[in-house]
Image 1 (cartoon, helix red, strand yellow):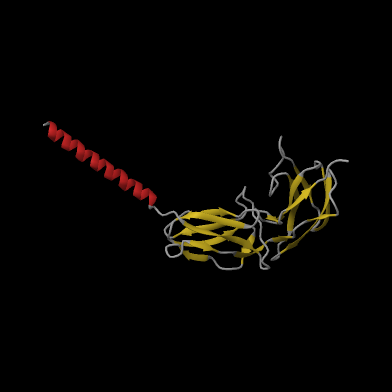
Image 2 (cartoon, rainbow, N blue to C red):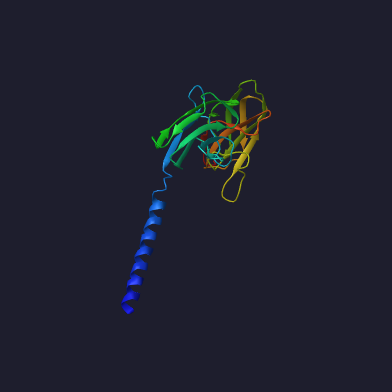
Length: 231
């Protein structure tokens, strides 16, 4: 009987080990290893910046048989990426305050697991990259800006964000260890005075614009401002 019990125990251990090995193989080989990346650009090839802290500008991927999209937020530098997609066929497109120029992208990750694709769009508002006029002072700077409404859109809100945090927006705010200045702009082009800055500090600045009837913002590219030391 003792020998029989030992044989039973040995068989049980072998079955247990086989089950564990099989489960580990399932997890290891499950297959979320397909990737897509690229940029969102306008027709001139300039990046269309997004906002990683919101769903303002999204690249959406819908796999065959799926009911919910995989959403990729477009970053402030216009890039997007996802490297954990299941290897099957997808439809991929862009949503936000813009109109797509190229058609919905159709990809098959079963044959190509690493796809790079740039989406070409027409933003509701094209926002020029701002520029510092002259040299910044210790606590202020003058910034030139401009914007163009596209596809019959009109501008309803214009704001300048200057922050110690990269890619600022209207909700960035200020706190014990960071500072943000927001300036409301009244025209589609001109020069804005940014005051209330701190000496010897690097700031990140960009323009945010909203078209009438739109829920999201169009942004400019980001620039940096380094304020000098107080004299």
